[in-house]
Length: 438
Image 1 (cartoon, rainbow, N blue to C red):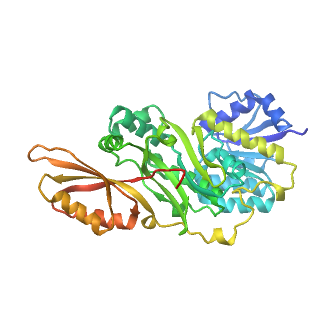
Image 2: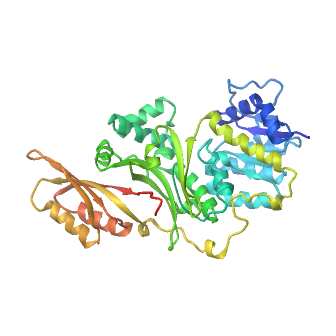
Image 3: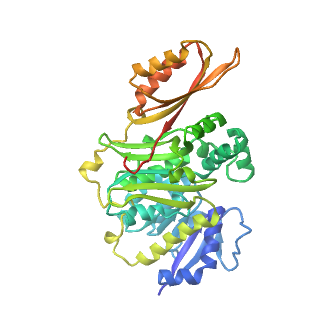
């Protein structure tokens, strides 16, 4: 059959991996697609020594690929927001199908891009945008299509998981492990997107849209990083039977949809608690299937390329299909009235349990006052640890609460921090059981 001709834009880590997987596994890919998938053109600025471009048409202009009449599919692997958006919209306007690994692009501009693609009758595929090589997009969109999704919770940033893993295993400080992650190439020189949860929020926005059939709403996601988590918090969580993970969590409730990224205590026995290093994992609760878990490499050249090429296979199979019968980009053919009215809940309206750590003067009545403040806000204590202190030292007090609204906890923390016997800010980490009965 007529080959599908691909133009690759970007030859960095993922672009290079995609090029090499397509060339190395060409025979198997052809057999699976039913037709050859060939690289027609590659656009790049910096050469990749891992790629042999002999005989390949190359250019420094990505927009040349988008307008190349011989290219059927544009693979966008340049990253970022603005230029990537222009490239993808140009490709769509020229009748090209698009495959992208760009989670920021989809989370922020996806609604516009999918509308344009639908109008032109072309495909925009983005499996590699979430969790690298883990096929969670296809699983949510197709494999779990019979289910009403109740919640999605995942470790969807490998950098943060690497840092928290080594803080726990080695008893080291956040700054120390971050520096090691940067030296090993797991973290960027500016790690803000990873450690402050922005990268995870991009991915969670996409997962939630597919899970519940709502528009992409990245701007409404609550985002909190791990830079304030200390070795003391990690140790105390372990003493209480928990592990701290940086999770993206989305839940369907009667009040609306929760969409939040933050450090989270989860019980040691949960599968997510035992995902270590740079690996990713996403747990999904469906009303029919129950809990399912998707685990694997969430980044890297060839793991991500695996997802990019899988999308190319889907495009190759569907390229002669009437686009009205394709699987919709975000799983649902339309937005039903009941779903479209579900708001993204503000964080202060969300209810969770909490881990609190504060430093107080070793003086009678301090703990009683803290307990009174919590009680006045309707917050009950599940567990309490108070360490011994030598004369003149501040005493660490660790509390585990039952579930309570964020708004009540915010007010309690404000009052506790105003106490003259309490030093510094109160550390607050949310607690989730992620139990299949939730």
